[in-house]
Length: 289
Image (cartoon, rainbow, N blue to C red; front, top):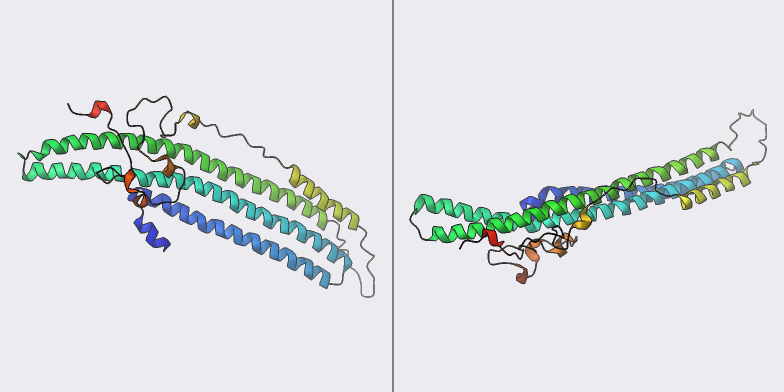
């Protein structure tokens, strides 16, 4: 089914559709890693208890707690990646909406060339040339809106992505450092047959290490520089808010808003007579007298 959807995507949106699909697989892998890590943590705790060694049992149980938290961090990372993926969808949906504008301009151009070759005196040429001027004007606005949304959302998407990577890395490092404190509590001095190991004397210290890890996670704050953006100057029509271009609404803002709806399924009232999914006005400077 996913392959069929990919084939149905407009040509302009196919490459980004593939990236978004691949990211979905990657997110699933992180979610799977999260579940596996939590399961392994539980298994380690069970194994430690089964050894009959109080020291091993205590340390392995608390290592299991930290491993389980690492698994939770993998799941949080997957959620953040899903947010980043949703932003990429907004670019893809805008690409899908712009494709009909490109297609219409190309269709009219091809028809003009065909008539010039076969019927150079045809009166239809004048009409087609006027239609081409309108189509070019509509496409000009659409392309400007596309580049605006592409730049804005690309920055936003990878701002989210990079921040998520940094958060995951810093929290995993934090947990790993506390884990190293835990394993230092385990005495691995060799014994000879018949010797009895002394009881584990660091239970309170081990509990404190877990408390420290919990406190550090709770107090963690991102320490990254914000990514600057000038997109606040863009209006709801995906053009600069100060723009006075007559062709105000070429790309439907709901499409750029991330709705995962193919352009060909939009309501008929959003289509113009040329079959485009975008409602457009032709700037006055492109109209023929």
